[in-house]
Image (tube, rainbow, N blue to C red; front, side, top):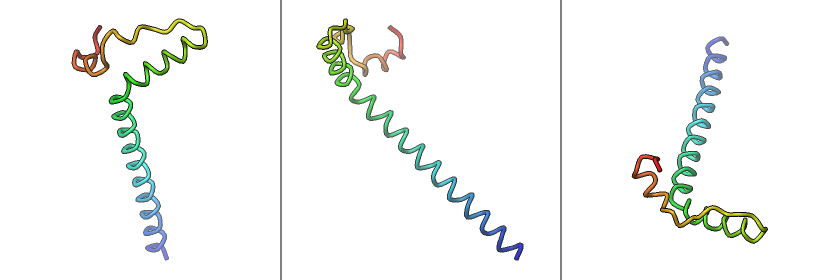
Length: 74
């Protein structure tokens, strides 16, 4: 009986680890996608802000790829 309980606990722990791995993979994929499309997203949000009467930042300063290649310094 005790052996059966230990086996069930291990399976429960294994399922938890599997869920954590899935969450990490999804998070990494989201960061990659946002990194690839950040210029487009920034530009579209800038246009939306301008349409609502706000002051949008200049999105033509440089690309996000260049920002990351420079090591995140302006």
